[in-house]
Picture 1: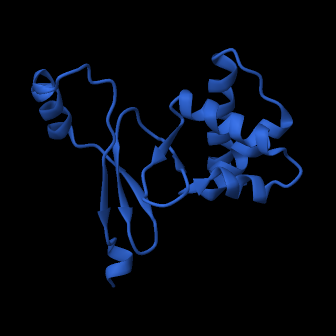
Picture 2: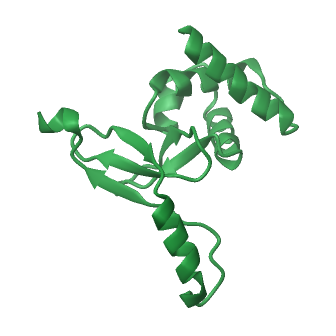
Picture 3: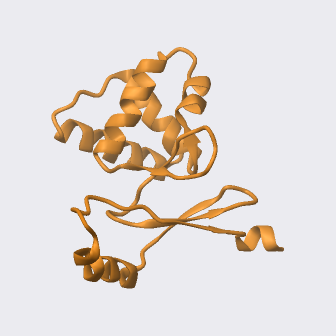
Length: 141
C-alpha cells in the first residue's frame, strides 16, 4: 500500500475506534481492500477478494462504514448495491455509464433549492441522493 493509502486506512480505523467499535485484523484488511479499490465496489467483490474473511464480517464492516458516513451507496440500476469511499460530508456523484468511474460533486445551489422547497413536501425530508449519469472525459476521447 502506498503511504496515502496507509494514512487513509489509519484514519478510518481511528473513526471506528472513536465510535466505540472494535477493529479486528479482518476488519482492517477489509478497510485496506476498500481503499485499494479506489472506486466503486460491491460487498460481493470484497468477499471474493478476501476469501479468508467471512461474508458476514465483510457485510457488517461495510454496514458500519456506511453508518459512520465513510462510504456511500451509489445508485446504479442493476441487481447490486455499489459503494464508494466518501471524502466529504453530504455530496452527490457523477457516474460514467461507460467505465463506471465515479466522482463526488458538491452542488450548493441544489442543496439550497431542496431546503427552500422542503415546505412543499408533504412529510419530513430525512435524506436524498443524486447521481448524474455521464460519459466522462476519458471515455469521450
